[in-house]
Length: 336
Image 1 (cartoon, rainbow, N blue to C red):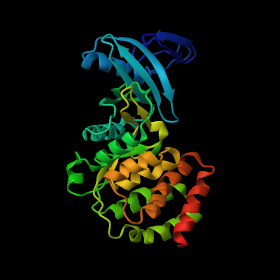
Image 2: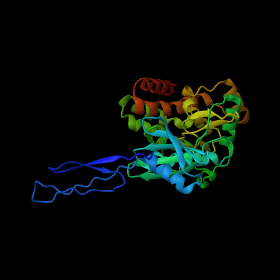
Image 3: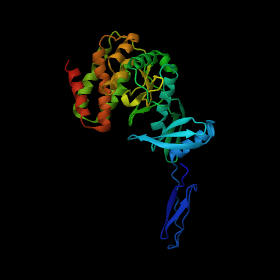
Image 4: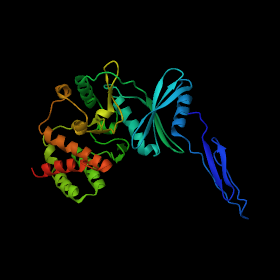
């Protein structure tokens, strides 16, 4: 992190000049022209460096003594930082602005953390830099064995917890900020009715992104009759992880389950299982969850609808066979 980066400032006609990092700009004069050609070369600040400086300045854990990469996705890079105190932090960086990438993640972590039910990393800070953005959170050492029943109980307890957002406590669905699901924007305007919210800001939004005539026509047919799948059930706003699959779950040495990397919003608790095809939830998990929150009539059909949202998102992100998965669900639901 402390290595000096170098900037090459090309001066018109004079070749490259090399300057150490720390200089915000350099002015280079052309010697081959009567006019002065001014070139400003700004330092590209590494978001990880900025995050470390913020930790050192604000969290009273001493200086950073070690940092290392901890993986990457198509839209963010990850690293962990160990301080003199021994405290470790997890840092995610991106070349995109914080509002587009990390603000929603931080608010989601905080909303789930506020329920005091399931373990989530605490989010400390989100910021933009000259070269992207970053989020700082707790580093959690996840290496325990998964107790599926405990995960099911903890998740049900989180879904039943009182929302921290006043709008959700008043019965509205949405979230205080926009966020992302993978690399896809996820709009979350507060909406009085759950079916209206899911129709417009989940299915409708993804179908518009897909720009596929067949999916669009079938999607319109499904959305016109969407209300019939929600008759005679009580839907209260629950804080959702929003993107719960095996890659976003872990276990501490104590056995406590951990969830992270959310796409959170306040919605119908059943929508949490839309990624179950990629989560590996077993019978022990489902039994423990539904012992606390019983299945409501029509669960199986709604489950397919909630899966559809995630298949559409995966098609929009990755293409390929996800198209056929989305198409199959749409065909089965619109032919009933």
